[in-house]
Amino acid sequence: DAGVIQSPRHEVTEMGQEVTLRCKPISGHDYLFWYRQTMMRGLELLIYFNNNVPIDDSGMPEDRFSAKMPNASFSTLKIQPSEPRDSAVYFCASSFYDKTYNEQFFGPGTRLTVL
Amino acid sequence: RKEVEQDPGPFNVPEGATVAFNCTYSNSASQSFFWYRQDCRKEPKLLMSVYSSGNEDGRFTAQLNRASQYISLLIRDSKLSDSATYLCVVNKGYNKLIFGAGTRLAVHP
Image 1 (cartoon, chains in turn cyan, purple):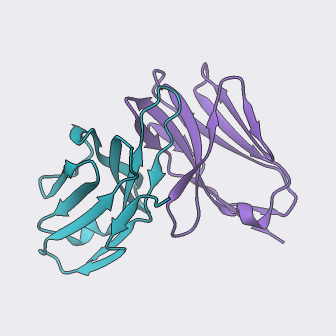
Image 2 (tube, chains in turn blue, red):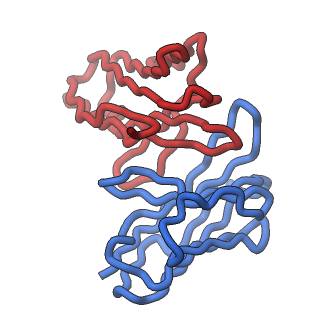
Image 3 (cartoon, rainbow over the protein chains, first blue to last red):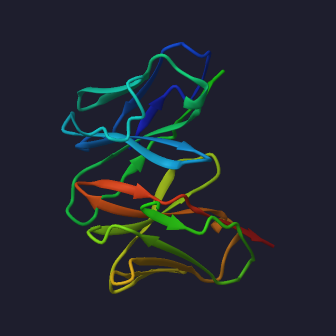
């Protein structure tokens, strides 16, 4: 079975450029999460969706970040314009809802470097 | 104060040692608890859930103390392959997980 798929795996861009990260969740999962991981701040939840609807975007750093989920099998995280402090590993994860057991399955991540 | 706090380590232990990690959380309404493992430059993966009654999976034992808002992970007979970062995770509700910063473990021969 394919796990969570993310693309690209690595992205190097210059400050001011638009960056789009992509995610395909595991089929049948109704939750999708975007995280950012840095050495300084650890793993932070940016936004999550349930049935393609954004539920909580309180972790999105600022208006330069936006996320969409047009259908159950695809989501994007966009940064425009990008800044060097956005350099991090961005993970997408998916899960199905269970009241007590809700393992999140993570993709391999996109390593973003903004010069 | 962070919602989930862990000792960052690193813990450097020889093979065969027993090592314990601790974690505290601030939200008493938190619903469920987990330990995730993250290998270097890889994604986090679920290691085990944590129950009030305590639970064991082979060499790994997890404990939860709701009154003290404290979670622990014990690893017995450490293997080289246990070297990783261990993330304490709390479910705030509605599937929203909060991750601790992680405790790094290095097992040496």
